[in-house]
Length: 205
Image 1 (cartoon, rainbow, N blue to C red):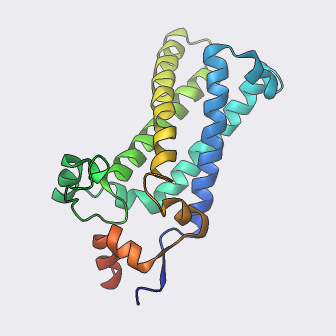
Image 2: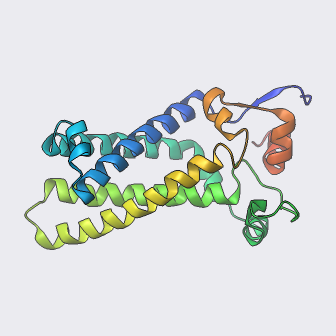
């Protein structure tokens, strides 16, 4: 493969999972804001608070299914940490300064690994707590605990979304294109993901 070629970074299945997860996450976040702050305009946009509750619950199911399906491809990269990941964190991936030397990364950099694991764990916690709130409203103790967990994870997601949007576009050029076409120029992949390219060239990627 020469440097003019493109390499597949995300399959069609991965991209469908990503965009399904992204759209459902945004709908859940917007409706979540409506519930937490009792925003009438948001409730009205969903056809009223009762309607928004039903939509929120079922979109939550879509979100967790897409998240679990995405783990089929991404979890094997997200749980692989080594000394280079420690080095990456020490220099914040080079995002704070272009003068530092950033250790080589695999298909996912350290920030992407931690972000994905955070979303995965939060998604599971949101789903479990949401199901308790949805199906066991009379169990006051568990519902109270579930609301606490649900809101805590909601705060994490609210922080994660703008950071992810920035790093997926302006902060890390080329990333958005991967989730649109699934491909990246080979020379760019070799520069940004040298450890993964080495695995691909050895038939292990």
